[in-house]
Length: 207
Image 1 (cartoon, rainbow, N blue to C red):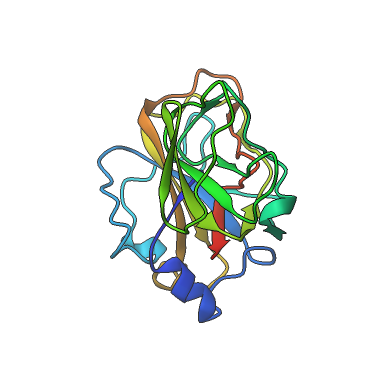
Image 2: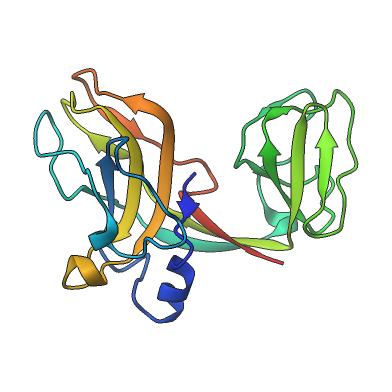
């Protein structure tokens, strides 16, 4: 799951990007790029993208099957389960829907018996060793197919950046999301895949 560049939503409200009709791109950047989610707003703010070589093409890979879907909390498919490992970014609902969704904010394993998740938006509930935050009554998911580079041995890279490349210049192409891979990555010569969870690379919560 990606983190939003924090100006992206306002850029969307200003009709500067369109997830399911524009050219949405995932580019790869090395660790000398220092992301600033508050001030970085356009492709012109990016630095240190990988060069064209070893299976990577500068400018990034166009994401396909970009769609957006709204889901009310009780219709969300992923239900909380006992003794289950969760990672930060996972979104769940109680097995018996209570009208709210919950975001894993501390990775861990849920309790072996049912935990009652709180019904106050913004509050956190500890569930075993995991912690979930109530994020509201619905979710809009921006989804995309797995991004795949073939015969990929490029790197090292640390970040993936999702941007809209339809506007005319780098100074007008909005940044949408940042993926932090956690450490430097290098392709091994085969296909390299960035697969998105059922949450999609980006999502918006309806409180």
